[in-house]
Amino acid sequence: MGNLVLSTRDGNATGYLFRAKEQETAPLVIMFMDAFGLREALFELSEQISAFGVSVFLPDLFYRFGEYAAFDVATAFQVPAERERIMGMMGTLSIASVMSDTRAWLEVLADDPNLDMRKIGAVGYCMGGKFAIASAATFPMQLRAAASIHGGGLVNPQPDSIHRHLSGIQADLYFGIATKDRSFTPENQEELEAAIKLSGVKAELEVYEGYLHGFAVSDNTVYDESASLRHLRKLESLFSSLKD
Image 1 (cartoon, helix red, strand yellow):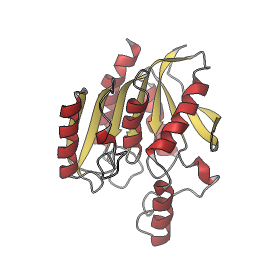
Image 2: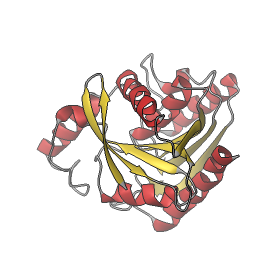
Image 3: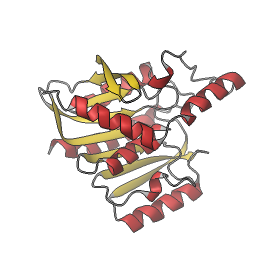
């Protein structure tokens, strides 16, 4: 794991690069974090994904706040002051701002001789799911595979809702959906399926029956090891196309 500080138009962002195991040059996968920020559970996932023969870049999307206190994953949404803090930080992130950051990061990472930037992947968890899919829409010539894992906000009334911007995506898409998820309801799923059909993009929607939002991340109170391993197998298959 390498610690990087990369410049954006809004300041310097910390990120971590997890290099592919036993490979000199490897494709890049960007991991978009969940609302709880960078921490050991996401480092573990990055290491697991890098074992598939790709290098994983995990940036801190909350860098505009400077140094901030870590969230307690178990209680962040139960303690009113912490809920207000995390919701406030999440509310500052827009698809436009995160994609601007992503453009800057891709430009810097392109100078790394050990990264193959011709085919890039992305994966996002919870709030990061929409950013992973948005990256495929924003950088269609580079992104070849993108996944949203129990992603929230994929379908909403706003003009930038990602389900309105699927046309033109060249990447293979995967959506791992929790059955009990207030941020992605069955009605949202129907709208997303209709948008995918209309756009003609190649996408798989897989429902994880009986599992709750957050099932894939190990420090979440609703984490399920078997469901997490299942999603990792899907990612391994999805990202194999980056190495062709």
